[in-house]
Structure formats: C-alpha cells, structure tokens
Length: 129
Length: 431
Image 1 (cartoon, each protein chain N blue to C red):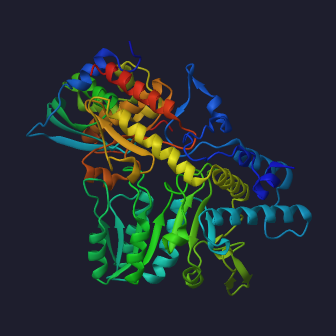
Image 2 (cartoon, chains in turn cyan, red):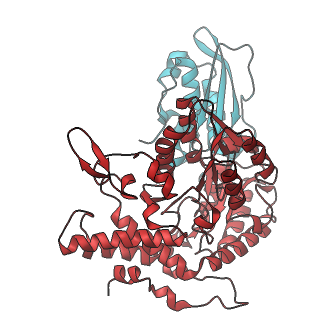
C-alpha cells in the first residue's frame, strides 16, 4: 500500500465528488497553483447562512483533486462563518496522508478557493513559510 | 600545484582520459567525477534527470572554488598586494576561458548573476535606448519567462509591440514567419532561445541571426540549454547578444554570462551602477569604466567565476562534440524507451537529431506532479510543472508536463530506471 496514493485518495481523484458547475450560484472563486499549473474553481449556493451546495471545477494532481473532493463532503451544510475559520490542519487531517512541504499547496488548494469564495479574501496563505 | 593553478593552466586530470577514437562507444563514463552520485535514496542510487533545471558539479569545480577560497581569496581590481593580484589573475583567467569556450572575446564577455539578469541588462540598457513607440520586439512562443517578461516590461514602458514567432506541431519555429515579420520593417530586436527548455527543440540560430542582421535588427540568444550540451561558437552563430548560465553548465549558481558585440556594448549606458563600473566619480557625476567592467557593478562573483572556469575546462577536456554525441545517443534511447510506456505522450521533435537532451511528456490518467512524485520513489529526479514557460504550455494545450533532461553524467541505466519508475507509477494509479 502506497503511503500517499492510498486507495481512497485515488478513488477521489478518479471519481471526484461534487465536481462540475452549479448554476445559479451565490459565490465563486478561482485559484491557480503556480507550482504545477493547476487550476481549481468553486461555485457555492448559500441558504440560511450555510453552504447548501457546492461544485468544484478545474484540473490538478491527485492530491489537490482528492483534497477538494474529500473536503466537499464536509463543506456541504457547513455555516459560512465556520468555513471562514477553517485552518490548514483541518484540510490536512481530513486528507489523512503525510503531506510534504512541496505538496502542501496541492493539499490546501481546495480549501483556499472555498475560503476565497466565502470571505472574498483570496490571500489565505498555503505555503510552508 | 593547487587545483586552481591546474585549472588555470587547463591541464585538468581529464585531459589524460583521452578517448574519442573512431567507432568508440559514445559513453562518457564520467559519473565518478561527480561526488553527489555517492548519494543514495532509500537504498537506491541517485538517478538525476533534471539537468535542464541545474547540473550536478564535478569534483574539479568544487575543488577549484575550494582552492580559491583557501589559497587565493581577495577582492579584485583594487589590491596592490600579491594575494589580490592572484585573485585578479584568477578572475581574469576565468573570463578568458569562459569567453573562449564559446568563441568570444573576453573584453565583451560580461559576468552577470544568471541568464535572467543578462537579458534584463540588455532590456534595460540597450532596450531603453533603442526601442521606441511603434517599434516591435520579436520573440517566440517557446521562450522561458526570462526571455519574455523583460520584453513585456520594455514594450509596455515604451509603447512598443511584443510579437511572437509561433511553434508548429513539430515544436519548431518557421523561418518563413521570421521573414514575414522582418519585412514589416519595424522589428528592432529578435530574442530567441538556442534550445527550448520544454520542447528540447534545437533552433536554427545561425539562419535566424543572418536574417535578423540583414533586416537591420539586433539578435539576442538564450543559450542556457545549449552551451552545456553541444559545441557552441557564438561568433560563428552571428549573435549580437548571447547569454548563458554557469549552474546549468556544471558550474556554480550565482554566475551568468552575457556576450555582446563590442560596438553595441560601447554605445550602451550602464545597467547597474556603483562600485567597480566607474572610471571616475565626483559629487557631480561619473564616467564609466571600460568593457567589460562598465557592466559589472560591485564586487563580482569571483569564486563562482573560478568555478565556471573549471567547469568549461572540464567540458572542453571531454570535448563538446563527444558530449553532444553522448547526449544525442542517450536522447534517442530515451525516446525509444518512453514509447514503451502506455499512455505517454511527449512534445517536441520526434527524432534526437533535432533536439537537445530534454523530453517533456504527459501520461494519460496521471498529473505531471504525481508522475514526478512517483518517479522519486525509484530515486529518479525529474521535474514537473510549467517549466517557466506558461505561454508555451497554454499553446500546447497542457497544464503541466513532466520533464526528463540529461547531462554528461547520465547513462542508459538512468533511462532504464526512469522507465521502470514510470511503469511502477502507473501501477500505483491502477493504470
């Protein structure tokens, strides 16, 4: 069994949950990972101060895609103020694999784009320094 | 005799290796000259296939720099004492060797920090004086960001236009398109790479400079991926400016080279100003030092120059024709072997003859970053990403590629290790 590319990671990579477009939507954001040319966007529909539904779109490596896919299952139904407070540990624990410094940006890209859409602030740092 | 003296006199231990006989195997077998290959990763030998990013360093380079610091270190161009004169001699000798290595004059060979700084020197100094509103700077779609962004900045500032020569489906440029662009009569500068850092394409630089000169324009060539891998005569190529970097050519980081035509450099204002580049300074103003010092402000990278001098000695002793043969054969083998990997697609010319030792590829169902991560499991170092060439990646229609690139120290075993790692990586992904 591979440490990083575990079965559930590859499953989420190959069959990402909550991927596609969501129209109409209330919030959206788009992020690039300059390290690998990845692009990840999100559409969010809001109801009663909570994420009613969301869809990711874009392309990326197994780690960034799986991380977004796994997080999406937790994010649906979450109050917006709670989303705004989510930190890097939340996403990395959820991912459940050892993430090296170079892959940290990949692992956090999904959360970064969601936080950007919810708070309107795309400056949330995902680097290791 | 110290290593520095040996390297200054050009009698590196390698000269005794001989070889190059007709019909002899093209294997260089120089791996043992590079201390880093003693490293292991999880019990596996280091398979280094990222020379396009930076080269590994032979012992001769490391020892030359060590000897310089241990025995000859002083600042250059100002001391009268014997030690300072040794440092002066070491720095000057390094410049002479580096210039001669590519057929250029030492006087018009400027040490910079890297290729990026060399190109910025031309963009700021020559560009601000010679490019105006309505003029055209022509570059190509296959350039590294270092040969795009300085021209974007120049053109934005001057109201000039930046145009790009296209890359065809073979990964090559069209001389006909260059002719058409030059016929417009408004092209001031044509800036292009000698070997593409993504496609591997060897650009017909001499044919291009001839056309550029005939049109009355100026040429700049980015030779970063060429000089370490083939015999380059920048004078014969006919370049007005030719830039390359030390760390990709077995030398240290922190030193790049800009060769420029004397009559052009003479007319150019300085780029960076301050110490060392002046003839005299008063409170009212300054006059500039002679070439090449006019363009080398501040204390230069002395030990790095010594290291680069040792690197070109090392390469010259190997013989650049043999280096090219070795790497061409290795590239042909690489192309042959990657065809065995299911779902693998590579970009650039399909035959080794038309390319340097760089192969960028994708594998269906795997992202480039994951390919590189899985290659690392086999001790194989390859790069993944946009390779500082985002516009090219966009025109190729890929977000990222994995890239294997060879150097003098690579052998067929390295290619075999890569292929094995790629096949095992595909298995991890259930492909």
